[in-house]
Amino acid sequence: MGTASTNPNVNYLTEFSGIKSWLFSLDHKRIGLMYMIAILFFFLVGGIMAMLIRLELFSPGPTLFSADTYNQVLTYHGAIMVFMVIVPGIPAILGNFFLPLQIGAADVAFPRLNLASWYVFMFGAILAFTTLFTTKIDTGWTFYTPYSIKTGTAVITIVLAAFIMGMSSILTGLNFIVTTHKLRAPGMSMFDMPLFVWSLYSTAIIQVIATPVLGITLLLLVAERVLGIGIFDPKLGGDPVLFQHFFWFYSHPAVYIMILPAMGIISELISAFSRKTIFGYKAIAFSSLGIAAVSFIVWGHHMFVSGQSEIAGVIFSFITMLVGVPTAIKMFNWLATLYKGSVSFESPMLYALGFLFLFAIGGVTGIMLATLGVDVHFHDTYFVVAHFHYVMVGGTLMAIMGGFYYWFPKMFGKMYNEGLARLTFVLIFIGFNVTFFPQFILGAMGMPRRYFDYIPAYESLNKISTIGSWMIAAGFFLALYVIIRGIISGPKAPANPWGAKTLEWQTSSPPPHFNFDKKPTVTGGPYDY
Image 1 (cartoon, rainbow, N blue to C red):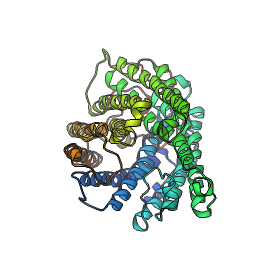
Image 2: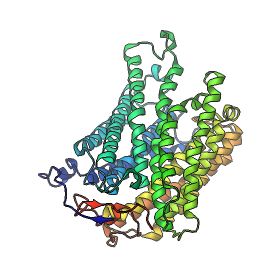
Image 3: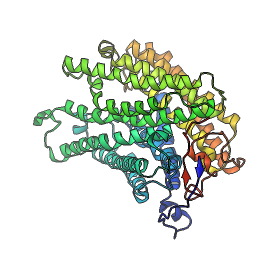
Image 4: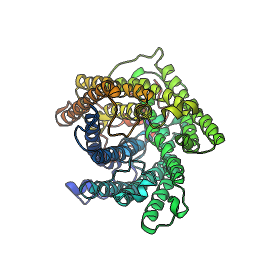
C-alpha cells in the first residue's frame, strides 16, 4: 500500500474550543469516542443491575428486594444491555472510529448525520433513564403484550425511548452503507476491504431494513395504550401473539447486529496475531451477507410454544439451523488461519481465542434450541439465558474487549500494561464460564427464567453462578483501570505496534484530523503477510 494525492477539502466545524469542540465535532473519531464514554456508562449501570440480580438469586427467598423490584431491575438490565450497549456498541464506537480509516477515507459520507445520530441516541437513552426516577417499568426488555398494554408502569416512555434509539441505529447504518460504497481509497475494490468493514456493511443492511419494523411495532404499542385501537388487545379484537411476530422479526436480526461486527473484529485479530493471510477471505465476506439475509426469516423459532402451526415450526426450525452454515464457515476459516501461523498471545488474541470457545458453545446450544422437541422442554428456562449470554456476552463483549485492546494504541497513541490486560481476560473468561455454564444445567433441571424465587434444589448452582459474576465484575473493573492508566500514563505507541497490514495502521497513532497526511492508494490486500 502506498500514498499519493493530497487531503480532501472536507468542511468541518472548527470555530469551537473546549467541550464544544467535542459536542459539535464532525470528526468521526471524536464521535466514536463520545459514543464510547456514553456506552461505557450504560454498561456500568447495566452491569450493576446484573450483579444485583445475581445477589438476589444467591439463595431462595427475598434477599435484597421484593418481587416487584426484581422485575424492574431485570427489565432495566435487559433493556440497557440490549438497546444501549450491545446493539450500538461495536458499530457506534469501533465502527465509527475505524471504518473510514480502514477504507482510506477522511471521514464518513455524512459527518453531520453522524453527529446527529449521537444526539438522537443520547436523547433516547436519557429519556429511558428518566423512568428510573419516576414510574419504573417491569415488563421485561421485550415489552410483551398483553401485560405491557395493561400495566400502569412507564411503558410509553421507555418504548418511545427505544424508538428514538432505533432512529439513531438507522442513521448510522445508512451512513456506513454509503461510506463503504463511495469513499473507498483509489485501488480498493470491495474485495480489498478489511473483513471488519464487510461485517459493518452487512450489519448496516440489517439496521436499515429491520429497525423500522421495531419502530412501527413500538408505535403500535403506544397507540394501543393511548387510543385503544385494538391491534394487540384480544378484548378489542387484537392478537397479543402478533406483537411477538413483529418484535422478533426485528429482534432476531438484531442478534446479528450484535454479533456480525464482533465476527469482523475476530477476523482482524486472528490474522494480525497469526501473522498470516486470512483463510477464505471471500467465503468470510459472503458469509456475513448470508447471515444478514437468513436472519430475516428465522424469527419464528422464538415462538415454538406460542401456538403457531406445526408446519411453521418445522420450517423455522430448519431455517434456524441453516444459519449455522455461514457461521461455521467463519469458524473453520478462523481455525484454518491459526493453523501453522506464527501465533502470538497478546491480550487481543487471548480475547479472540476466548470468543472462539464461548461462541462455539453458544452456537451449538442454539442448534439445540432450534430443535422443536428440545425447545419445548428448554423454552423459558435458564438454558435459554445461558445460551443467549454465551452468544452475546461470550461473543460480542469478548470481541469488543479484544478489539478495544487491539486498536487502543491507534485510538489514544498510548500503550497499556499488557500483563494486567491478560489478567483481565483470565478473570472475565473464567468468571463467565463459572457464571453461565451452571445455568445450562439449571435450565435442563427445569428452572424457569425471569423468576424472583426458586426451589431449594437449584440453590447450589445459583450460588456458583453468583460467585462467577463477582469474577466477571472484577475483570471489567480491572480493565477499566488498565484503560484509564494507559490513557493517562502509558508509554507512547508506535504507528503499528502489531505489524498489521490494514490501512488504519499505515497512519500515525492517534491519526491526524483527516486520518492520512496524503490520500492512500491501495496496491495490495488487507492481509498480505
